Length: 198
Image 1: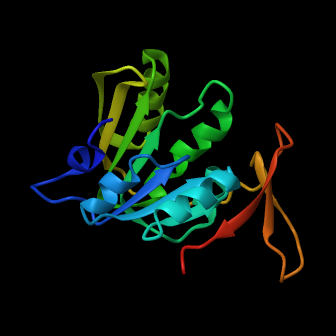
Image 2 (image 1 turned 90 degrees about the horizontal axis):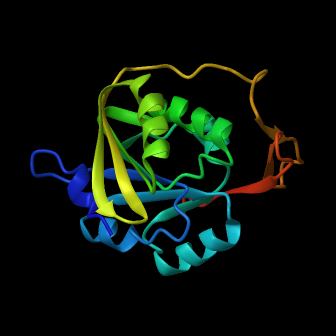
């Protein structure tokens, strides 16, 4: 596995905060936390997130659709990691995630995306070039993460209300019920649970 903490390092310092989008089991979590990085992970799979919370109680893990959550959050991060996004099956949703990355990055923040193939890496690089001045695609030689796309120097952007065009919608519930977020293309819904403040 790549040493992501080292890859995000700038001037001998690790980022203070890192957002891991689509974190799944967050196999890199121990490595990041051991370097003193404040780790937040987000994934739609609630069962996986529960297991990660048990394994890495010092991290913050959220069950939600990333595009929806990024659009709503006020949090900002020094670094964002996306490992092996499923671009083939959910390209429109991932494109929206990439559009929202600058709005959750702190000034001077960096993004790293890994992909198993060159075509996915090329698409990620294309999306990142819309917002970042420095985008590099690197061959890693690691089979599951053959390519790494690293982006720096993001342009400052303000969040826009694109509610009419969103593929992800929140369904209203009573105040004491969790939010339900649905992907209007696939019909897949997930309950949003946020344990950031615990």
